[in-house]
Length: 509
Image (spheres, rainbow, N blue to C red):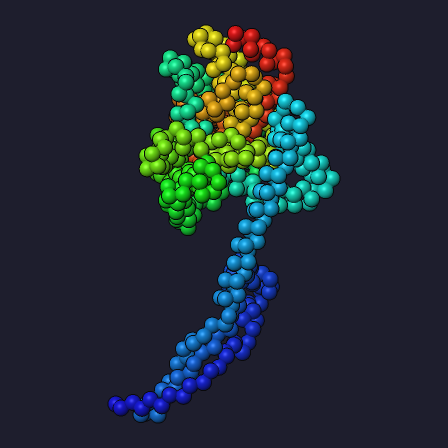
């Protein structure tokens, strides 16, 4: 059969000659019909587009005609969606920059004000109390304002939560410098106090929580859901890799290109630290049990520093000195990261506000356990340090071993002769011990209650232990977050009292 193919082409716009919603059964109302067959999420999600098509008419020899419509062109809806997505991304970046910038600015202002007034109290802790008080007042008077306030700072809060472990790393990176003057025997004693103290504090906090739980018999209810930070993208990994390679090579050929050696080394040392954390976070869970992302992060920075010291003929120690200079006029990569520690404390106000109902409901268990475990941790460390004849200056340096780095550094600054680098290293190592062994230890001790597990973990291993436990037991996360914040807050308040400091020093000897 021969076929002739005269093709007539015309562009037409097609639409249905009737309303789709008029085809509903009589028993369904329009709104119910839409909800039944077309959920709002489906209707709203589909972009509206006008389709123009090309009509092909094929005439066969038998006189029949078949028509085929081929879509030729979509409307410009896709372009509009892309433009909207780009606008939202730019707005999100600006929102993050403004909210995080405000928190950092408040932290810096408070530090300067407290130094000028010679006030020996953690400035960030004062700021945290102020923000929390404002939120509580707004929530009781204008709830919508409190919600808007929290929503505005949500990007900054999530940024801090996403990168939180990274802010602890500098003390581990420069650990070789911090311990080089400490005798091996003293190092062994510190290790004994670190591990034994972690286990003892965990037991005290856990058993106290269980005892109070049995006494008050408060029913456990679901906590407010807590958002999880976004995972790292391949774009982020490749971007930081490019920064590392380019700045590393540039620093080799131009050692003072940015004015000083510390500033010139800052980009590639910071990139090495960030990349180490990204790679460590992506490791399988069974590997992370023995090779925590923090360890991977510190090793990445140390290996990069070693490589630069080798190729530049300067050695490892000077490069580590560039990593953490402790000079605001000449900052290194570690100084940039530790500059966020104050904002971590300020962010406690938002996490506590979000869980205020939980704190109120379980106040007896939470506050009793945190107060007892904090007092036990401080005084037991002082006592054991004296019993094993550890040097008093070293014992004082490790007193706040179970308190988060940001507040532990503020606490040891209240004592004369303390080694703040050793303090930070011991605190992070305590967190690593907890992160690796806390879940198995809690199971061995038969701590089944989420409140007891959360409080015991945060009171003994602060942020790193909290992150490790909550990754597998999300029901314990709210109690971890609350205890983690309150443990540091109460420890700081306690050590700010002159009589308490004098009693600790008397025990230390």
